Length: 399
Image (tube, rainbow, N blue to C red):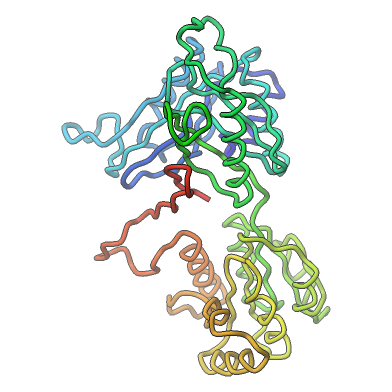
């Protein structure tokens, strides 16, 4: 639900009741990943999407029903061989949807509203919800902050009108602590996915499945070199959701007027700016200066940082010369192996816009684990699943 946080926060502020349908599991060639959401209010207004159009109508009706009954339900949608026009995913995938009413006065309303407010304002937060387990627990919600503190509970008192005997006994505090720990780790890396855990917070016992949604500030892209290729790359990067900084030591070129789409334009020596700024495991560094006096001290530092991607522009001759210079200043072969140079995928790009697309394509492939080969005739998966989170069951990364 955090993918439509801004709109849902507004609905909360206006006191609207609504129901949220969230993708909680996928199989095959599913169009949307866990965390994608569709919300419907009492007036029938809808925002978001769970399938790109395949099952939106059926999910819309489930949301309307949830608003009437107050019950959280989980439904599965897949391809129908008998009738391709029936409700299902014609792409051949399967998606599981959790439909949860969010009504004024409900126990989870305050927790969800706080999470939506944080996400809408760009503050980091993780929202953990039970998506599979005893019916009485579906939709139970825990909000986890970056420091590990949390609000709400996954094993608290039963929902209104639920007989106490239908709620399994559990160590609620232990479950909350365990999930908060996992959610905090996922929040640190900006990941959304599913987690399987025991109902008492252990790795055994009665299993529960939870969806943990992470809301984090946009990842950074730092573009070094205020050239025409950088201007095109800024536009593509903003489209992909990056917070973009352009850095160049030459004040005549590094101006906000030349880069109106950038979030920041910095006049400084690239290596000095990199030393002073904050980067993390999602940060992308694109070195477009292809000038040794800028490139070498910059890449010497960049290749030793825990960032997601380091790419450098230049011809193959420039690349070979650059490698030699980097070795001369002590950069190891292991560090050099991280360098994407010449930057970008082979698209035959000529113009700045085509080159920017080539660079962006490599960044996406690197981020998602793609091969970069044409899908036509290939036997590689279209969508790549994330790696399992050690010790915590299945984990579908959608970050």
